[in-house]
Length: 205
Length: 86
Image 1 (spheres, rainbow over the protein chains, first blue to last red):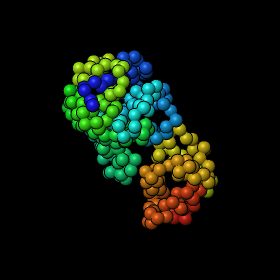
Image 2 (image 1 turned 120 degrees about the horizontal axis):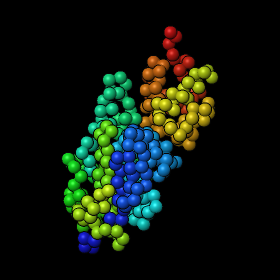
Image 3 (image 1 turned 180 degrees about the horizontal axis):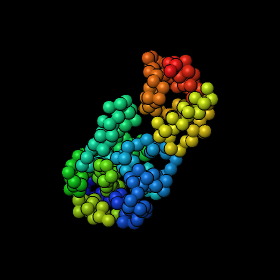
Image 4 (image 1 turned 90 degrees about the horizontal axis):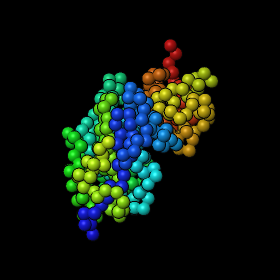
C-alpha cells in the first residue's frame, strides 16, 4: 500500500548546451553549437550503438538522451516492464516537427517526419529502448508544473498503476530546448522524497 | 549499372539519415531490410520518395515493394527498367 513515500532517485537537466545529472555536469559544449550537433555529442558520450537515434526528431532525441543519462548506470531492471510508467509534459507539443513536416508537404510529404508529428512519440522511443510497458501520458502546459506532475504520479502510485517512472519536462521549439527529467521509484529509499518541492529542487541547476 | 548503384547507396545513406553507415559499406546484393542493413517500413516509404524525387519513378503496385527493395542491385535494375529516357 502506497503511503506517499516514493523517492526521486535521479534528475537529468539538459539546457544551454549542458547535460547535468543529479547536479553534476556531465557534458558541456560551446554555446554557439547548434542543437543537432549538441545532441550528436550527447549520443556519442552517453550511448552510441543505437542508429535509430539519428532518425528521431529533436523532441525524441532530447527525451531519449535524458532517459539514457538517467538509466545508464542505474536502470529500472528490478521492476516489471508493466509497472514502469512515463509521464512527460511540454509547452509546444510536437509543433517543432509539425512545421518541418508541413514544409515537406508542399513537395513530397516525408514519411520519416510524419511519424514524429505527435508529442508522445518520445515516450515510445524511450519505451522501445528500455522495454517499458507501463502507464504513460504526455501533457501540454504553458510551463513546467511540478505540482501537477507530482499530483498525477501520486495518483498512479495510489492506484498501484506504476512502481517506478520517468517523468518531467521535454520541450523544444526551434533552437530553444529544455529537459528536466526525473527517475522516481517506490521501493528505493535513496534520494529525495517525491513531492513537488523536491522536484523543483532536484531540477534546479 | 555500377555507377547507378554507387549513386543509390549515397542517396539511401543521405535520405534515410544512416549516419553510422558509409555508402561503400553497403553491398550491392546485401539485403536492405531485417537482418541485412536493418531498414524498417518507414525507410521503405522514404526509398519510395527517393525514387520519385531523384528518378521520377512511382511504384504503381506496392506489392512489388519487397522484390524491388531487396537490395541496391534490385532497385537499380528497377530504375533502369522503368526510367523514361530523357
